[in-house]
Length: 350
Image 1 (cartoon, rainbow, N blue to C red):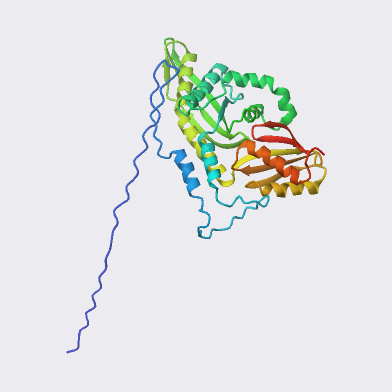
Image 2: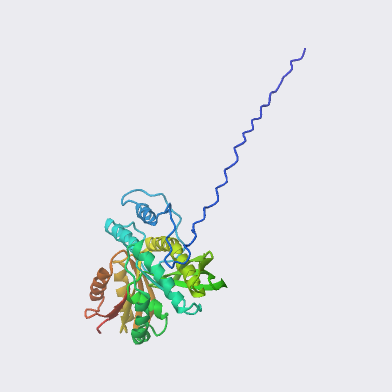
């Protein structure tokens, strides 16, 4: 009897359990107290605490002497030879964390939005109130900005030629890191004794040093009520929603600036006036690149040369660095004409 070969085929099928769907986010906005222009801030959690994120960025820097896994080389060219790809030193790390934790803000509104000036002032005041009470920061109030607009107009034209808007100029002049622009519209309804109001728009986040838009937070208020007037109802709406939006605004601002700054350093602009010797200017650029993280030459002419430099150092050290580098580069009589925030204008003295 022929041998019967029996092949046993065993097929195992493992079926993984279905993935759980994330629960929907709970509403962050609370009902605004009727008839009040200073609503309570809703309870907010900070799972993505930005201070921890900034610390993580610093701690992710490779330790000097430690072998690192090879990374894909970047395709973006470097403006000047520098050591900005090196890990942060302990001193630079401390400066970076302190810088991110103490970002300074200037808040204003978009004057082209058509928002009533009184409502605009209320919106700016609520944003400033949040920065004072919850972030522990000093602010420039609405009236002070208005005064600066009038007082600084001549200096603004002379220094910028209108290349940036005057509010950005004031933000730079007052050493603000972030410029927040409130762009809002309000509406009302109801009947006498039972007026309703609402507000919607966005808060734009700008890097004050470059006027570059970093991001924005949109908002839409719930309907608020006032027995007094339509203006009071709209005042409640815009005051409430601005207060409730500010935690997300500051969190995003810190995150964006942390990411931007960790990659290159804090940005400073250097303007050298009276630069007829192009070779000396090139030597200045090379010497400067050895002292900071990165240098970009923005423009050159015999009358003026502009640089952007990136470094993890305070403004006071930047000024000293420029004097040292100028002396090494054939400009021993270089002197500071004026500074505006993180923008310095020097004359080579030749």
